[in-house]
Length: 148
Image 1 (cartoon, helix red, strand yellow):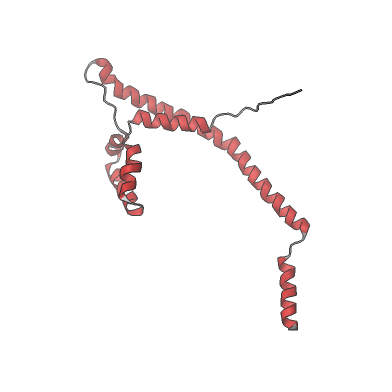
Image 2: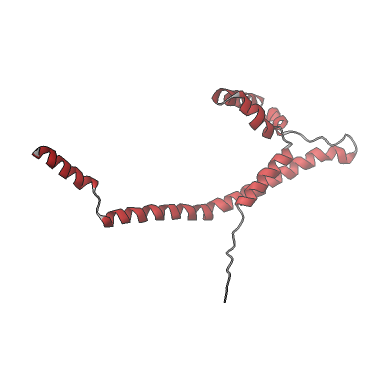
């Protein structure tokens, strides 16, 4: 019985953390979380704005490439799908991606989820990506309300 009492006593010394140590650890975790938030604000938002600029350039180039034959009167406007661009650049990777999604998740995920996104026109897909990145990367302005 004495041995059990000593084991419990020593275990309690290791488990019970003094109050000042516990508050220090809580404050440390809180400061780490605040620092990560500050890091996102200082690095993440400008990166999203840069991504928005790059993707809007890709969208404009794709739109101009698709609209040029129609503007010259050679052919009607026909937008090129992103899957066509992907298949012309790397056909085996498109097939491999479809097979990997089919193996990892389910073939319906590619058919009704990713396939719908990949079969959008290139200018529309990159325009949407640009709009989403611009929205989440926008500068936030503080609003000060003064009431008497």
